Length: 276
Image 1 (cartoon, rainbow, N blue to C red):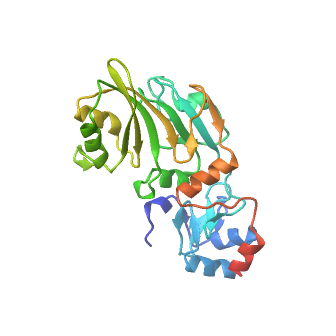
Image 2: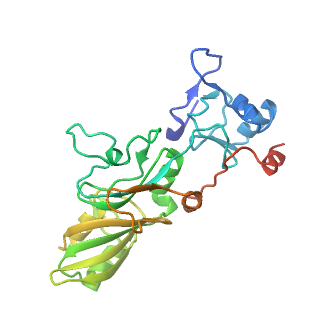
Image 3: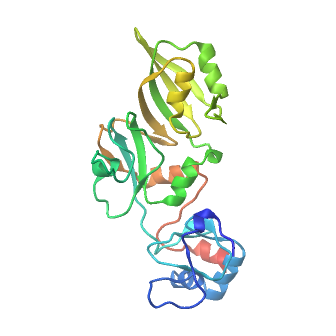
């Protein structure tokens, strides 16, 4: 049986197992009030059911309510884990990791115990600052970061000196970094000082230390890097070290930006009609 990476953590069994809290996927859908087990099996065969973002067509899949995320036609089924969506203004000197063996402060230290295991969506290196999303919605995080979905990330970047229009155009068109070609991006001169410039940079991909390496390639090293937007989410006036929960409209906007839909609170009559 073949499975893609995003579904690799699913428990696949053919018999009952009283030692765990899993149940067959078709039984879960029936218990959630989506449809009968027989109708659920047909939905699975048609490729209309996803578990943790991966399309499932096999009958042997078992899921654990509250752990695995089950969708039918792109709509989240009630009974799945509650998602948490936070936006944090990460200060400089804080690590984008869950835990640090050297005792340095991490973004998880800033948000504290949320009651769920949340992860940063992408990275800001230790010397960078600004907008960082944290969530336990793995499917959304994966799509937000994948370059094929073209979710923008906007930064204010302070560099030494003043880059020429020619230099910025070169970076916009793409350059080679560590054997990889950067995708087209946007570079706008946002301000100048005596010995430095502020560049508004919009990227649609995320290579490690990409902006710093791009600026070094034109001999204008970065002295400050701050992310101010990710897709439809803006940093706004959120203070450094502070965070807030995204509201439902912001979450919906993020999912649209990533090409996803979400249904909460049960199964609608329209959905039942489509399934039956």
